[in-house]
Image (cartoon, rainbow, N blue to C red; front, side):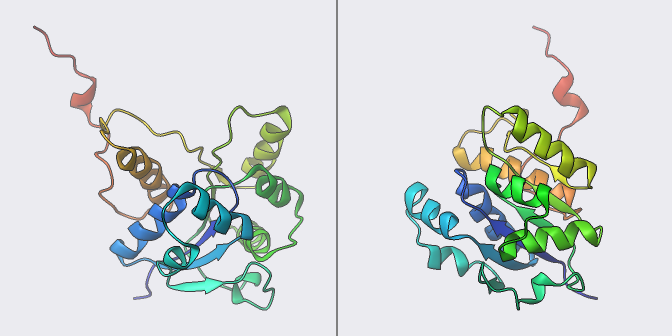
Length: 195
């Protein structure tokens, strides 16, 4: 049986912790990852975390340079269970929405759409302009899943890690990958205690 394999794109938006945690969770779950990281994403790692880009790339199964169009990820024939861009900058959203595949991350996303493979985009931007919303609607119409980095609170997170795990868990749910990153919604969560 073939291993589950996903493409992970890290673009230059704030919220790089989400992408790092997805790589960690995939490794813990035995899911293979093909990583594409933009130059700005590498800079965000240095700005927002105490990690280095090298420590983050070490979490991936395979690493692909953002400018390498000879990578197998540039072909629609590359078989995978889905691609996630996390975090997904508005520049990346715009590039995918317009089919402007001028780097490997954008080309791999373009291939996912044209081959009807799952494409999950995790924007963290707020507030959103009409242009942002139109680009996201274009992508949703084309088959992408727009999954904003909006953690829930019904699992009662007590740490930043708990909030991050909720979003990453939602990404894994979308790709039908089993995990235990957060407690799922239960009927008893809606029942109020009477005193």
